[in-house]
Length: 165
Image 1 (cartoon, rainbow, N blue to C red):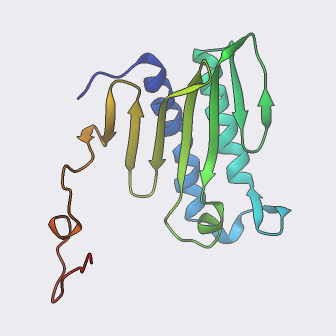
Image 2: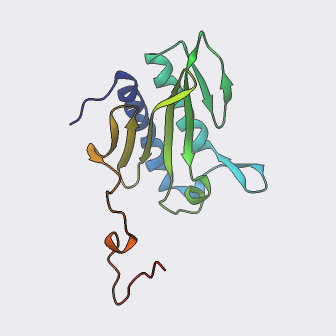
């Protein structure tokens, strides 16, 4: 496993704890309580519970960091140079419709720059995370941009060829 910062480790632990709610509630979607925030903007009790677990876990470790969260808004704390950014269910519409394509998203902004972030899909148990100067990872395996320069070198196409003219 690669070496990760203490802050990213806190984010991972918070996600793993909160994801248990999503896994449970995803199996009971017909029983979810849903509120409408806008024409195509919904919030579920799952959003609120997951967000609160994440906030509690992050605050336990870093009580002075500020927070921006989708459901609770902005919470300025003593440390305004470090801010957690939280979306408890990125893909709420999919979640509501029983489509297993949603994730928990958390980032850390430090001195007005995103320095780490993660996206965790609790249904597929897939975690993507990255840190400034440390690279990007998928389930603890480094990922990187391809060095291919031509589209035809990148894709396997059955029975055809991409024409780049």
